[in-house]
Length: 356
Image (cartoon, rainbow, N blue to C red; front, side, top):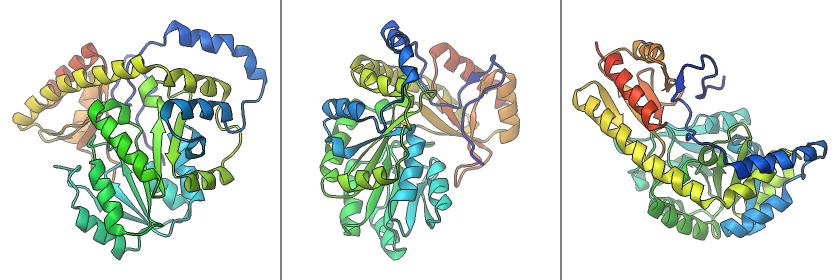
């Protein structure tokens, strides 16, 4: 069973379970969709070639390195059923669909547990040994990681590739939340990944869902070594993106101001929420794992996890439970950032919910 955030019941509840930034679609974007309503009578492009050409110019990658997906999730499953994989290793806890996609297609999966206290600090030598000892030919990681929100250093990723030392060793990196992290890190990471893509079979997964707040459109894309992209296209279904999605992608890519605004909002609200959560940690009521994206992870200490969740519901706040994440339990919750007033309401509600 798939289990993800997103509450669709009582409209009075504030949904802290999905990592979608609060936004208002500008008039120009609304007009773009309305002006093309008549195009719905036509089939969209089979693979979005014109859209990919626009992406190539903005992102600086060759068209042969890009592929579109009906959300990032489609590309996770397409990769699992397309690319030849003997054994996979996943750094966990992390997004559950990687494991599900791989196991659905009969691929053995090894779990490599992260140190929750510092999940970004990997023992590179130990990880490389595990990869070699288990005959792993695919490493899957999420950067920044979901649900811990921590970042992996680009130098560590390169070091893993070099220590494993196999040209057929593949790397799948989900960067769906990369737009929310520090801009200096983004530039450094982008330059390193672009260089590594030339020499290794790497696939980078991206999502427009989070940055532009359009989960209903299902827009994901991948950047990869041409050999990987070619393999994916052999098995990709036609018309997987609708007309509005294909129209939206070039528009969004030109909205640099939106990315700046989202990044600034995330930085401000992350600090505000982190200060509140740190206070509860100091009081011994939670364990707080600060994230680098638009969410934080907590472990409730002062009360039972089920009771805490129910109390937060009664206060009008719906949190993402983490029972389904490998290595976590019912005391863990991922908390997405929202508006200042909503974040304050959540923190105030938590003060009461954490009382024994």
